[in-house]
Length: 440
Picture 1 (cartoon, one colour):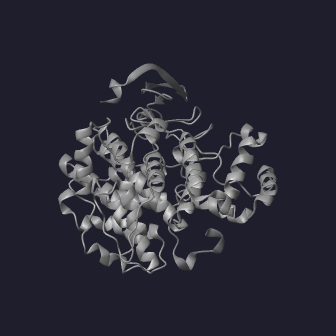
Picture 2 (cartoon, rainbow, N blue to C red):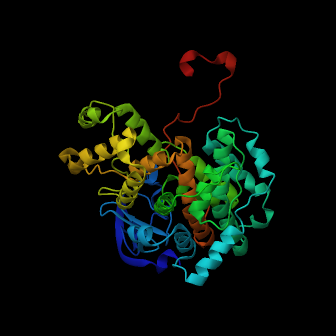
Picture 3 (cartoon, rainbow, N blue to C red):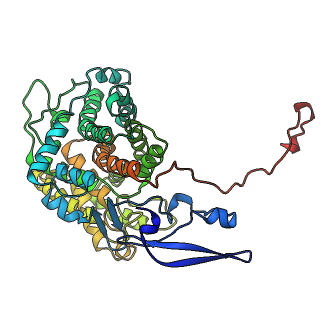
């Protein structure tokens, strides 16, 4: 589909230096329309200026739709709440990859295809021994995922749809295996091979927590919680890591390198590390008796303290993912007995107070998905260093779906943003013996 084939309802006009330029306005299925600025520079000699791309549509996509004002998140048109309550992660992965929910036979075939690729090449384990034991698991994941391209040469031709398909399946299948290995390496335990009779979430938990010395039975409440978390984090439109993958992929880089780039972007504390910040905040508060003090600090504009896990860059109402995880969080609390866990009791009391406080209601600072996911992970005994790794496992499905969509888009071209240059104007080279300090 070309841009001309999209719905054009009117044309915006830009007047500059006595010249009027027509800018086509296109509308998609839902959400704001877009101004087509592709001819702006040739017509005016001007670039658009949009730091952070907060008002720029960098691509067109059929995968995910977010309406932050209304608290809507759709995967291929399906509300996230319905998918999290009624579906499972493998079904959602199929939906994101192929555009529709699978039939029973299609899902069985898809799961079998994923299971076929859960093992990693045995030599990959040697990569882990090159890292220090205290290396952050995300550092390991960046390196190891990128290195997969050196093992799977039969899925590197991005112009071949079949090879793109194989690469997608491999990445989705192997991410939990690599994550489990990263965790086991950090605590000095032997690697655990995947067990394909388990579900995707059960397999992840088994590879993290089982040992050769004792049988491990996956708690169904835990596996359900993990499955929901994976669904809720599977995709989120053109965020920083997804945009990174599209930018890397636009150069023709192989899919393993692109996903490694996405993992690196996700590692940033402003993106995938927010749930870690929630737990650090809870540690700082320390006790339920101190919550009012920190609530007041959060309201003080002169105090640098902020309530982490509240509010969202996109959502200006309740994050729809938080609705689902709130229920899951309370299910986990019921399973573990929150009364016996001061840290979890603190989190639940903070949630209760913030939800009833007029300041937070007025500012639309509702608990977000990071608030609840961090609490759930902590309750399960998952270390903070693994939080973003689990996020990466979930987001791999969205990343690879976005990557495949971009490669198949006939309008795709290499990403090349421009800039507003504010450096020195043209100046001639001065030999060193003639340079004066004031000339520098």
